[in-house]
Length: 141
Image (tube, rainbow, N blue to C red; front, side, top):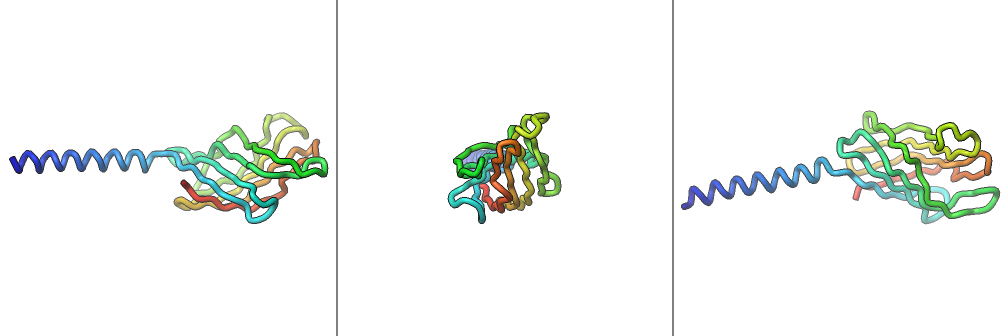
């Protein structure tokens, strides 16, 4: 009887460990952060893919200057960004051939475990809309 219990205990423990490792090691990480400059209360959020190779769902939620007026905006690029050696460096224009009326997103950052930091800028040249260069830091939740 004790041998049966011991065997069952080992199988159950192994199953729980495998489930824990699978759900925690391969789950997307959701990062939420703030800016150290710019308008107070602005936030940035994004996810890192399960394999750790892509940064996606980038969202800026805050104010920018648009035609000389402060406006609240929540926006971000649709495109995913490749993570190489724990870093991202990109400029995304959406729509891609949108010219001076397109959104332009500039993102540079370093990811190290559950911490990330870098710079972000979002602008539309033709409308004089700009967040200007913002410094951010974020933590995985």
